Amino acid sequence: MSTTKKKQSKKTAEQKDRDWISGNRAAWQQLLGMATRELSADGEDLSKERLLKQLEDVRRTLRSLCADFGDNDWDDRQHLGDVLDKHLGRYLHSQEVEAVRHLRAILEVVPAKRPDGATPDEVRSWKRVEAARAYLKELDDE
Image (cartoon, rainbow, N blue to C red; front, side, top):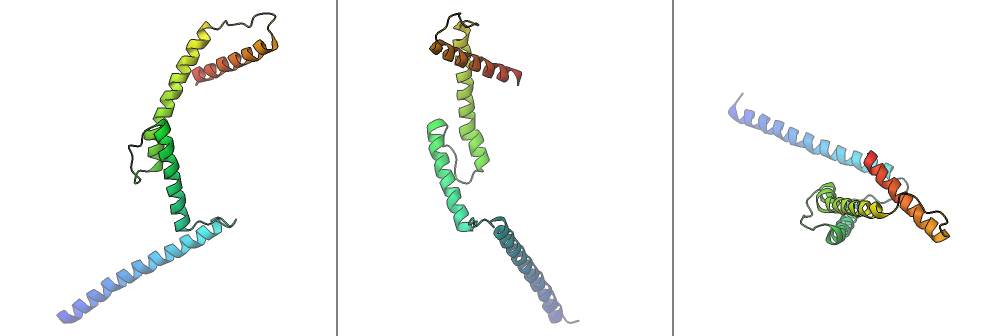
C-alpha cells in the first residue's frame, strides 16, 4: 500500500472516530432530553435556561442569607452544598450551640418543680420550661 493511501485510510479512521463520538454525544443528548420531558410530565419546565435562572435565584438568596448569618467568602463556581456547609451552616451551628449554652444557664436557676398554686400564666410558662428541659435532654441523649 502506498504512503498516500495509508494516510487517507488513517485519516478516514480518525474521521470515523470523530463521527462516532459526535453521534454518540447526540444520542445521549437526545436520551437526556427525552428523560427530562418524562420527568417533567407534570408540565414543569426543566429547560437549561430555566434551570440556570433557578440556580441564579438560589445563589442570590444564599448570598443574602450568608450576609445575615454567615460569610460571603465564596464564588459562584463552588458547589452549593459546600457553600451551605462552610459559609452558612457552621455559623448557624455555632449560634445554636451558643443558644443551648444560654438555655442551660437559664434553666439552672429555674426551680426543678413547679410551685403549688400556680396561676394559669405560670402553668403555661412552666410548660415552656418543661419543653426546654425535654429539648436539652434529647440533645444530651444524641
